[in-house]
Image (cartoon, rainbow, N blue to C red):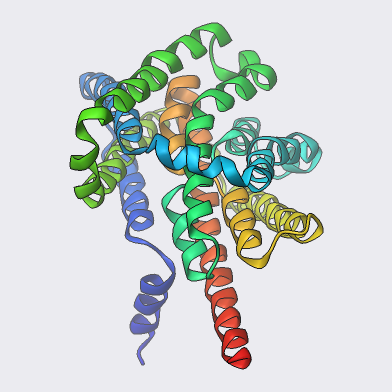
Length: 334
């Protein structure tokens, strides 16, 4: 096997197309940033894209699945606490370490990352691969996505304050206008379009990703014009990777141990680990563009992009390993 074949196989097995598309989008923003009138047009369109993105979130999310999950309330309470309490406490508690590993703006990005909801698609996919409780994962991931629209801005207001690049009240008002209102309209539209949505979930997921890529291009265009890359050395970038790895490792260990010590069965422990240790890039990118100033947004998004890839690689490895072990154990019993 040639050297290039090995590289291709690594990317094919471990990196999803969305991640590669984000890398190319950032490169495009560095080489051909939108400036002047073009940037103003891209910035305006980004606001429309963010609103449409959360409208589609509301359209996709089934209230019936959320209500169905309430019967396993202990499981979902643990996941909510891991997502919206454990992570923020890690981000705040590790401040002396994280600030040494990053710049002030990048630390804000790490802290903002800790406030985000869990992912939906990958949490469910990894739970399935590991032979976990898929139905519970659907409920937990969906609930996290919904709660994040409200809880993430509260955490930002309580901890970041003026660091968010404007008044907290204005940031919350903008979030309600660009996120909560479109989300609510999406839920209302679902009453008439639920069947249409279920038949076109794949198409809608691609629309989500294209929207995020557009927002990433807008943010990093401004970052390029503001001198982001001139201030970001390789040593800072590597230190940022260490910071993301530290947060992810602690989250995985704590959620796994919580499942064991609280007496959950194996299938539910898988859900707690995968849903409680991951963060949503698709929710985080548009939120960051609303809450933070344009000069900060690219620095805020960068930790999210690094963490996103780390969580995919790590959880994919764990899911395959746990799934294979469960299959082997089942074969021994037979």
